[in-house]
Length: 254
Image (cartoon, rainbow, N blue to C red; front, side):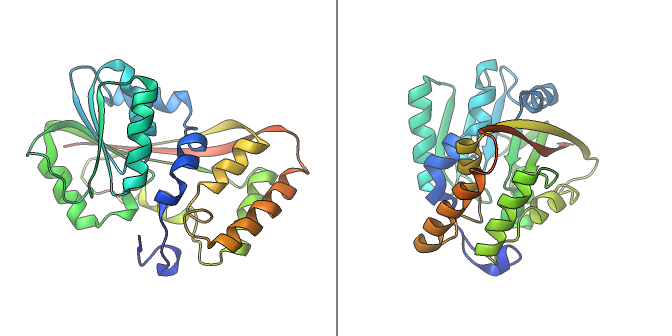
């Protein structure tokens, strides 16, 4: 994928990170899911579409309430992993398919709820707004979510700087956080809170490995070098620690 205002127009592919993303990026705090459910995400007897679903992190964490859930992503690799996880977890009310978010195969007014987590700024803005309007039922809700670590903790700051040093085209954070203030629909509400998330050295390394600036965009040689240097960096810190994250939830009732 190439987005001209992200990473200086250099390509990235989250499909390369599918296994790592499924293992290490399922880190949203429980309080976030409680907030989403209170907004109508995952409600029983509702139809919910998760666009840019990746490996299905959101659907898997809210599927127990009984919604009929569809997750779509442009990456075949991500969807393959999501389908495998659905079988492994024994989840029967979530289906996944490969599709661009801007041109989906669904009929008009198909969904009570549409979500976009960690992805909305990657879409063609005009097209995705039109598609959400087409797909949402009258009175339905659209929710976009973004979560990122802050640089308040030394481990996060040093990890972040190492990626920046080795991938100078990486433009982290700004696109996602800025997008949360860029409202695609009227009468939106924005909830922002911070939460400390626990990690081990391994899980933090995996979380950074599955970010856009590393595995999704580095060449093999650079990635191998980054792996060595980042593990050396983490060896200077305790085995377990917490990292401050900021969570954004924007709600629109259409």
